[in-house]
Amino acid sequence: MKIEFDDGYSFGKGAFETIKVVDGRPLFLDKHLERLKKSLEFFGISKEIEEVKILEYIKSSEEKNFALKIIVSDDNFILTSREDNYRKDNKRFKLIVSEVRRNSSSKMIYHKSLSYYENIMEHRLALNKGYDSALFINERGEVCETSFANIFFVRGGEIFTPVISSGLLKGTMRDFIIENYQVKEEIIYLDDLKNFDEAFISNSLMGVRNVSLINDIIFNEEDKTNLIQVDLKKYGF
Image (cartoon, rainbow, N blue to C red; front, side):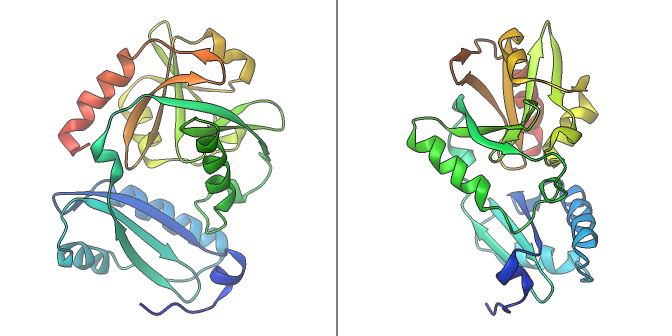
């Protein structure tokens, strides 16, 4: 693999996508490529994404179930694969609120850019404290997302999720849930969390996972999480 030392390497100018591959099938590939193309337009990167090359890479892989990563910058188009660790467990997640505040006015946070290390760093800090991931809130105290997933809450059988303008990535699995279930997109404040019965997170590899704890707030319910997980099984989650 040859990597060019362009602005993607030097300054994080570029975007990436992570796609779940099941039995040689890239799940929700169209949605991932649509988001990737929009991000490349945002960065001013005029590179054509050839879907046929992605499919050829998947077909040539000895493994049929894995996580595919697409990385694009001015002079690079890179495909890599790794084990899909989410296939191994269905644990409930414990989250801790990050001390870092999301800047909802930053255009960068609405793209899966190569400047991703803050998410990684906060995730590792959460792990070191005995939690499974970090939850970001913005400068106004509005809930955004975790270090690697979107988040949903349930109250009285209704599903809620933070609005995009709070400062979060428009996830492909988030889109799927909103399109297939009745979901209310609202501003959700940190102080509101104690009023919810259930919480779950979503991304393109895990599907959905239940949340049992955010700081000292306990969530006992799992009904909506279980319902969506059953529906996602037909896709290979």
